[in-house]
Amino acid sequence: MAAIGSIQPLWDTISLDKTATNENVASSQSGFPVFADVFQNAIDTVKQTDAEKNQAEYLMATGQLDNPAVRTIASTKAQLSVQLLAELRNKALDAYSEISRMSI
Image (cartoon, rainbow, N blue to C red):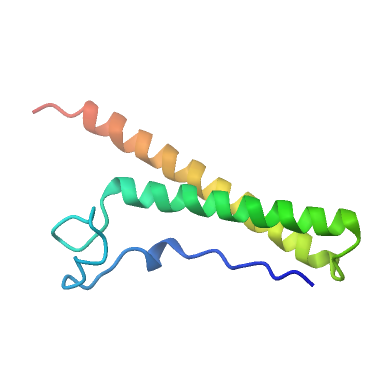
């Protein structure tokens, strides 16, 4: 039976410990990842979950998958990670448009 990996929560990538700035070279000096890191992590998660979904579908199609729920779980994880990335993009665009409307 194929094992499907778990989705890494987004909040695990955001370190609240201000001493942990050496973990990520691109991190800002406050210890939080920069904006690009959050998006890159979301994109990597989408790629990972899509690969797991494709693997589960292949195993299902070839009859090597014992439990069909594994394919359904992998498909749902992939769908949720894409939805999260889309919502991150939408919120970023909303924030950009709000900032651009501010008068200085």
